[in-house]
Length: 408
Image 1 (cartoon, rainbow, N blue to C red):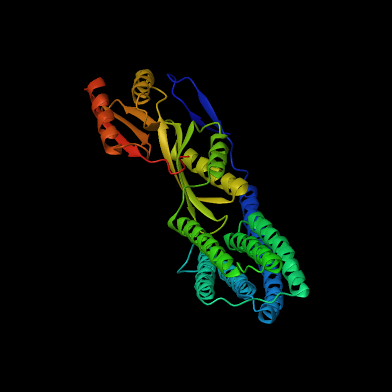
Image 2 (image 1 turned 90 degrees about the vertical axis):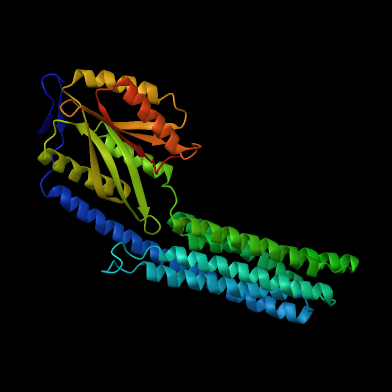
C-alpha cells in the first residue's frame, strides 16, 4: 500500500490504491481494442443505414418523376428532385464515415473523426440548395401557372411516398441518435421534412380536384422556405461543433465523479475536453492532493486516474495538473475559510480552488473561476486581488483568473 502521509500537525493518512502490475495496463489495452471494434461497428451501421436511404430515395424519385411528368405537377416534380438530393446526402454520409474511420497518422495524430462534421455540413448545404432551387422554380410557376392533371393512381403513389418517407425519416434519425451521427440525424430530419412536403402536395391536389383552385405553386414556395430554414439550422449546428462547444455536462460530471472517487483526491477542477469527432475526446484536468505526496506517489496516482477515466468514459486524459493543499499549517485553514467567504460574496464567481499558503515565501495562491456572464471579468478579478491584499498585507497574493470550460 502506498501512502501520501500527512504531517503530525495535519494528523491524517491517505491510502492510495496501487496499480495491479501489468493487469491494469492489459485491461486498458483491451478497452482500446473494444473501443476500436465499437467504432468499426458504428461505421458499418451508419453505412448500412445510408445505403437503405439511397435505395429508398432513388425508388421514390423515379415514381414521383413519372407521376409529376404525367400530371404536369411542379410540386411533385420538385419533390422527386428533392429525393435525389437526399440520396446524394446519404452518399456523402457514407464517404464521410469511411474517411473518418482512417487510422491516426503523422499529420493527423488525433485521427480523422471530424470528417463526419464536414459531411454533415455538406448535407446541410445540399438541403439549402434544394430549397433555393425549388423556391426559384415555384416563383416561375406562380408567374406562369400551368394547370395540373391528377389521376387516382398518382395520388395513391404520392400518399404511399408520404408513408415511406415518415418511416424512413424516423428510422434514420433513430439510428443516428443511437450511434451519435450528425450526418444521419440531419438526413433523418430532412426525410421527415420531405414527408411534410409530399403530404402538402397531396393536400394541394385534393383541393384542386374539389375546387379547381390550384395552390401548388404557392404551396411549393412556402415549403421551399421551410427547407431553406432547415438547412440553415443544420449548418449552424454543425459549424458550432467544429468551432468547439462546451463539453456535455453529463460527461463532464461523470469524469469528475470518477476522479473524485480516489480517496487521496480532494477536488477536481479545470476539466477541458477536446472533441475530435463523435464520441472521441481528449482532455485534461487538475486534481487537488495533500502537500505531502511524493513525486512517485503522484505518478502512480495520475496513471491510475488516466486508466480509470479511459475505461469508464472512453476519454483519454493527455494531462493532469496538480494543486496541493496545506496539511501542516493550521493558520492556512482559517485563512482559506476567510478568503472563501469573501470571494463567495461576488455573484459572478463560480468557484475558488487550488488554495495554498507558503509560509516561507509569504505567498497566498489560488484560482478563482469567474462566469462568462460577468459584465467585466477583469474588474471582478482586480477587486478580489485588492481585498486579499487588504486582508493579509504581509503576504503576496498569487491569484489566477480561471475559466470553467464545462460551466453549464
